[in-house]
Amino acid sequence: MTSHAAPASPPAPSPSPPSSPSLLSATPPGARAYRLRTSRGEFAVVDVPPAGGGEPKGVVLSLPGFTGSKEDFTLVHGPLTARGYRSVAVDGRGQYESDGPVDDESVYARAQLARDVLAQAEALGTDVPLHLVGHSLGGQIARAAVLEDHSPFRSLTLISSGPARISVSQEQRVKLLRDALSRMTAAQCWEAILALGPPEEVGGPARGLGGQEHLRRRWLGTSPAQLLATGRQLCAEPDLVAELAAVPMPFHVLSGAHDDTWPVPDLDAMAVRLNAHRTVVVGAGHSPAAERPEATAHALTTFWDGLQGHHNGTPTVTGTATTSTTGAGPLA
Image (cartoon, rainbow, N blue to C red; front, side, top):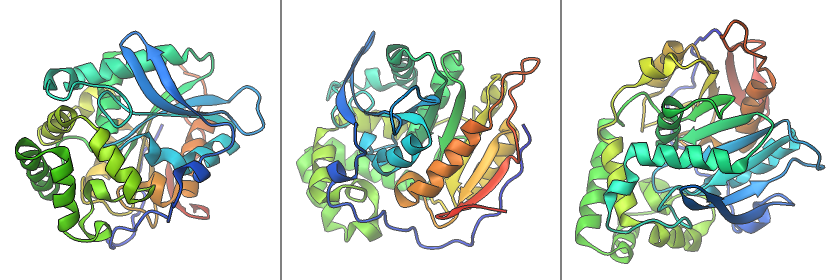
């Protein structure tokens, strides 16, 4: 694979996700919500078969970000399954509807979460290619899983997930959240978050798909220990790009045209270091799957469809490795 950084649009205010009064109504037909049994416990998933039935071209396992959940991928399920893929999104240990201890941070160490992902991959038991996708924190957990054992996966896509620790401005926000969690209950924290201002301006756990009641349930359902542990990791993550680049598998770095969690130039540089396929979704910020789901799905499936077999141990991808997309599809 070759890698070139795609031109990004000038910085702009982060777009709000599309209006979504009901996540249920946005979920494609045939979707199943259930608890995936693994060797490391049960994990809540939403599992959507390819449109029209039949054998999928591949299975997508998607990991959400910090304060997120499997519902962050709701709008991208339909476009992915319409292109022939089975789409599975999972709540990690202690996230929303997946169980996890509320006061023991040790089970949320990066290595433990990585082993959870490997157990999820094993439990899916698919005979078709399994593509791992991680958004933000989920990308760094996915990276750790691949570094532990890449053999279950055909490819790794990092969505808005950078090479090392988060930006200084986001680190300050995460530390404020951690300080609040150490002094207040989850319910008190939620009220304090809402008091900061409109979610579309303030961001954080109160901003996202599904409306305020869903977001509140998600916040209250997520383990404080999980938030404390993973927030600390985001502020201290080392640069492991060289180690990841040594893994013999195809990589895809996808992001919006602007991002305040990891600067887009840092994501461009990471893609070059990984010799990765690079996509910039025009009009999206930190959450392309929610903000521009059709364009994001187009970029993902174009990458997967272009993958060929290993040649002399080196993964290859057909076509150009640089894709800039809009809501209507790829730009030249």
